[in-house]
Length: 220
Image (cartoon, rainbow, N blue to C red; front, side, top):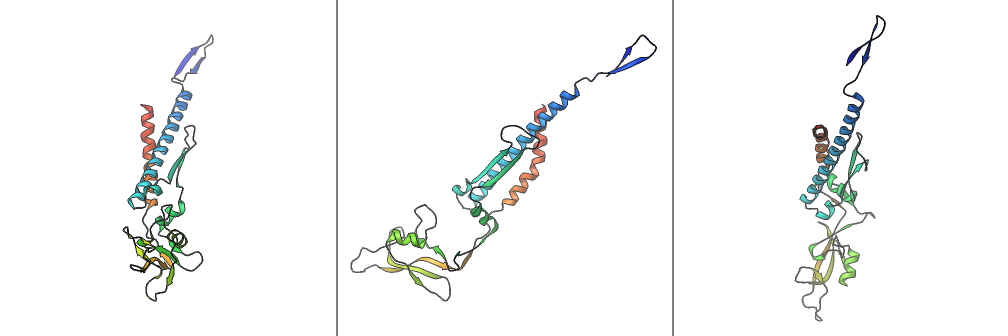
C-alpha cells in the first residue's frame, strides 16, 4: 500500500507498506509445498510397492518373494521440495528374472537339474538339488541319457503315499521301481511373468496430480 507522507516542505514522499507480509507468505507457501511434495512422494512410493507386491503374488510367485519389495523416503526426517523415494527388491536377481524372462544356463556348462514331483522340496522349502536329495534319501542317482527329450537322473526305490521317491524297505526287492527324480536340460527360458515398468510408469504419471492435491489440502 502506498501512503503519502507530509513533510515541512512542498515535496510529498511516498512510503510503501507491504500488507500482508509477502516474505512471511512466501515462507508459509514453501512450507506447504515441502509437506505436499513429501506426502505425495510417500503415497506414490507406497502405491508402487503395493502394486509390485500384488503382481508377484498374482503371478503365483509367493508372498515371501512379494515381501522383498521395500520402499524408502528421502530425506527421512524432514519435508522437502526435493523429496524422493526408492522402491526396490531385496531379491533383485529372482524378481528381475521373472520381470525380463531370463534365459538360465548351467554355470559349469553341463546340465540344469529340474526336480520332478517325486523329488520333493528342499529342507529350506525351495528347489532341491541332486546332492541334497541323495543325502536325504540315502539313494544314489543314476544318469539316463535320452536322445529325444531331456535326459534323466533316476533312482531305484518306491513311491510313498505322498508320491515321493524313498528307499524300499522290502528285502526281496518287491515294489522297487526306477523313478525319475530330475530332468536334465541345457538351459531354461523363464517366461515373463511380471511387468514392473508398467506400474512404475503409472506411479510416476500420478505424482504431479498427487502433489497438486496435497498442496491444495495443506492450504485449507
